[in-house]
Image 1 (cartoon, rainbow, N blue to C red):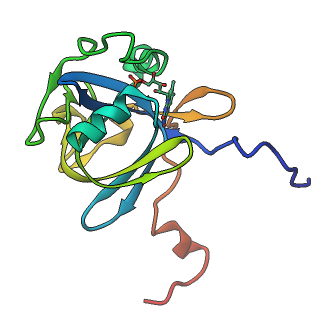
Image 2 (spheres, rainbow, N blue to C red):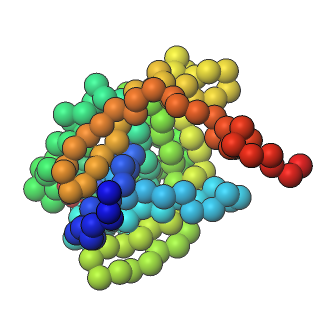
Length: 189
Ligand SMILES: Cc1cc2nc3c(=O)[nH]c(=O)nc-3n(C[C@H](O)[C@H](O)[C@H](O)COP(=O)(O)O)c2cc1C
């Protein structure tokens, strides 16, 4: 087997979320997959959003945004939010919305996990704004919790791969992080 060069637009599996903002006072959601945790404490998260998207305008207006993680049962609505722009189509009534302390970060009642974020940094690239926000509040559906922790098996979240434009389920758990490597070789205490 050899390693072959492939198109740099190919990417690894990514979480699929709905990125919410208020634009001109109206709720808007777009599908978002370019998401990365950026700092441990304070908890920061980075989202890359095309500069032309309606949502970019809303985040810049209010300096707040939400990231709402849907289960597979919301796949069709989630994909739809990535097919149409709030510039042409009113997406404000697609979901039942609630708010935490951040009044410009609309959260989705039916999503498994909801992050309310305050914009802390913005980096402008050629096509995208990289918005970095502090995760101020997190909400999870009460029946998808395992004690105090999210039950990710029950949450049924989904992933995206490019360039095949395919959604994937998470599949079964296959190991324990920060643990299984100890069976490979001794780890100094
Ligand atoms: C699965 C999926 C993932 C997407 N991820 C991103 C993303 O991470 N960043 C981005 O700028 N656009 C992404 N998009 C495209 C936007 O969701 C899409 O252009 C949307 O219509 C923009 O809506 P708005 O103009 O109302 O903000 C994605 C679309 C899909 C279908």
